[in-house]
Amino acid sequence: MTAAAAIGLVALSAPATEIAAEVSASWAPFRNAGTADGPEPARVLTPQAVTAVPEPVVDTPVLALPVPRRMEVDLPSPMVPYGRPLELTPPPAQCGGYGSLRQVPPGVVPGPGSATVTWQADGRESVQGYRVTAVSQQLVGGEQPAPPSVQVPQRAGCGAVSTVLGGLAPGAPYVFWLEQAVLDADTQVVEYVQVGWSSPVVIP
Picture 1: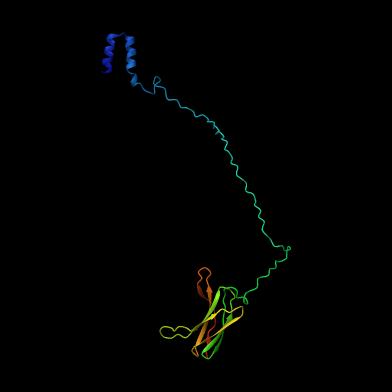
Picture 2: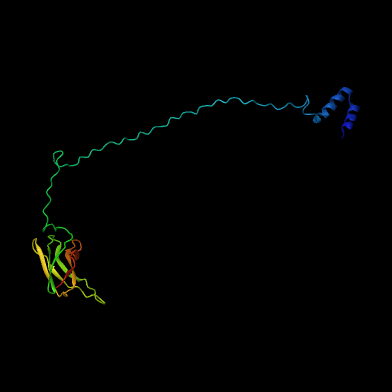
């Protein structure tokens, strides 16, 4: 229904004053929002200062850790006056200083087709004997022949041990190996351990 038709219907059933009020009410949706009788503009809120609220303080329990204490250890010290070096007397060496496994260079005196080899005895109880081997320094074609060797038993007490090796080629240089037959305390097996060798010696 149009506005004119609405006005006509109102005019037939009411006085002029009421008709004008009703017409104004029916046109309310078509008012300009910018007029004085329009809706009020939205209010703008002015930001206010915000007061910071301090956080509550929570009491944290403090753990009491044990404090390490210094340990005092009494070490035995020799009764030596302060500033004077300690004087110790080492035990006597067995058999001229060969009381432990070390290099023992043998001495060699060449002879006609032979050589006399001498060395200092080892006074350890584990040493059961010795073996001396003459290793030729001249190579031959094919497989090398087995070098001549001799076994020597351990002597009683300290002193020099000597043996003679024969069957050596005249004019050939030889290096003499010295081995000790040592008894293993755990396995009770005798093993040969090389403890020395000589410089090359030419047999006359």
